[in-house]
Length: 228
Ligand code: URA
Image (cartoon, rainbow, N blue to C red; front, side):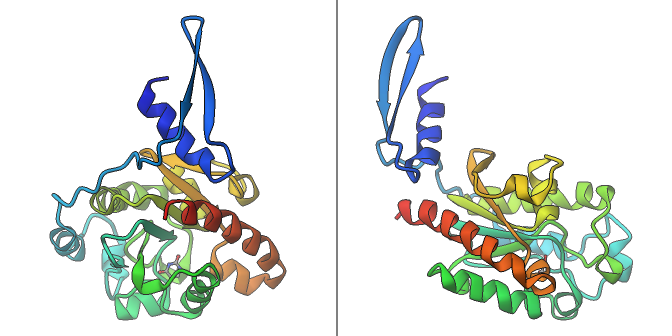
């Protein structure tokens, strides 16, 4: 493990109250402490507007034939936080804006509950076009569309990513498991800490899951506020 990797790992552990770790290297143990540095540097060389323009004319898959509008994503591209959902629903497809339907209203409330204003952060989806009848994204659709999200991440360089729902988690992290196995632990995507909670649509269908979602949000908040 090199020094950079250790610092990155400590960044993740810091919010659990762990500030140092013992590393054994060639039988020599050294203690590395967290210096409060972010492992990430902002890189605005790529331009979000050019990427959006490219995305709006995308015809890589058949969803371009059934969509009304491409939903590229929106918010503050300089934000430390990127929220990722699954795909546009009916309202989003009609308006071209992310999370504007009932699930979007709940998402706004969930963020507010952890002191995050929606307008301060960036929100995007795995798919930029609505799958008919809101069916799950097909693997080929994800394969075609993911490069747009990966470029958004490269431009925004968030210090944390919060994923809403299993579909977003499986398709970004490329780990096939239940939502429960993604909860309450950080993952890494290109060295960026990633947290996972329930999709607001799932919470609207199953309000009894809100208690767990609240635990997830508080877990995430602890990390996110440790960055400030
Ligand atoms: N559900 C999502 O996953 N994303 C949206 O933008 C709207 C609903």
